[in-house]
Image 1 (cartoon, rainbow, N blue to C red):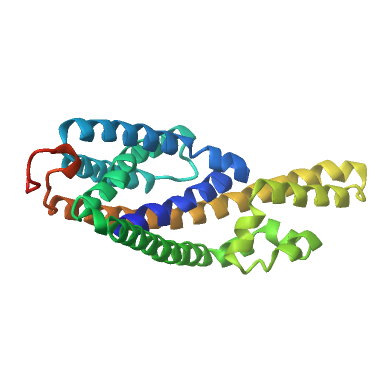
Image 2 (cartoon, rainbow, N blue to C red):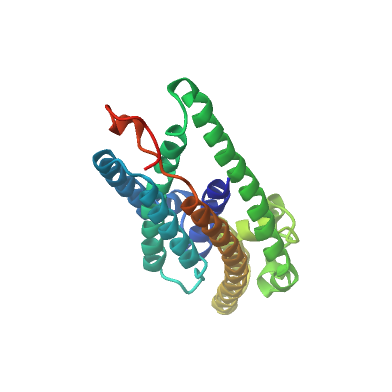
Length: 274
């Protein structure tokens, strides 16, 4: 449960961070998670080979959860000023930790039960992981919304929102009092669409005033984006701090588990405590 709530519940918001801060499209923001996916793939394959060779698994869980905790702490330092290189390195480290923790956790559970009970054990493990993920996503989503909501008045009073709040494009998205609307307004496609609509309005102005109006609009849009990204980043930092605590607790609990001889690794010996 702790693993599901901390990892699955918090990583969802990295894609939104990539869209809000780096201006990535939904597809690009997903591709930006590849360092983490690569880390998971590399460490899971390596850990599987080493466990098969040495027959020990607890040490890999311990290392995996510790590495994941450190990486989660690193994600709590993400901000609008952070480079993608920093995010990519931390995600890769997180992937290395999780790639060990996820499959070995399943292995540890399955190793505690007889063959006839493996289905129940495995499904129960997945149930509690999914339950943790569901609860974590709901709680973290509420935290994110509440964090942005505390900045709504500040963002809503920007010249950009005052100018575009009554436009048809914005009205279709929702109320500017809604944090989700403000986040949507800061996505690249929507910002581009609003800017195109504003440019058409500027064409009705005298030629001498058009450039000035566009410059003012661009400056106001930049100010709005800055306020939204900083509000989003502050909320996301709190989410990763809580996620770090949860996965840190999970790391401590891993050390209390008793390691037993892998049943598949001992053909002639009776399974017992290692």
